[in-house]
Length: 102
Image 1 (cartoon, rainbow, N blue to C red):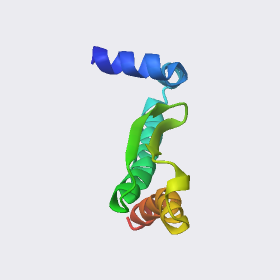
Image 2: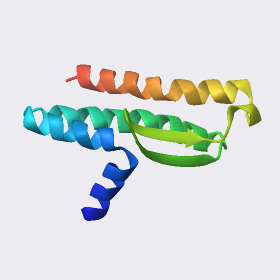
Image 3: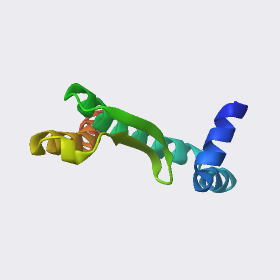
């Protein structure tokens, strides 16, 4: 747990401050839902890139939640970049369909 705290605080102090703010306003559950959906969105980009043979460079916390880094766009074809870019919003669309089906 201490290592996780150090990673979040050192990598993204604003994220740590947001956690504190949501805790004191009793909205911490909404904050973690938001982080979970951002995580799934970024995993969509990462998963599509790996399926298309694009080398992943990293996956780390950022100000907005998480950030998936893939190899540069200049090395890839236009359609691969388009698929990777559209995969995050596609994951959001699937999550909305799942949510509205209940």
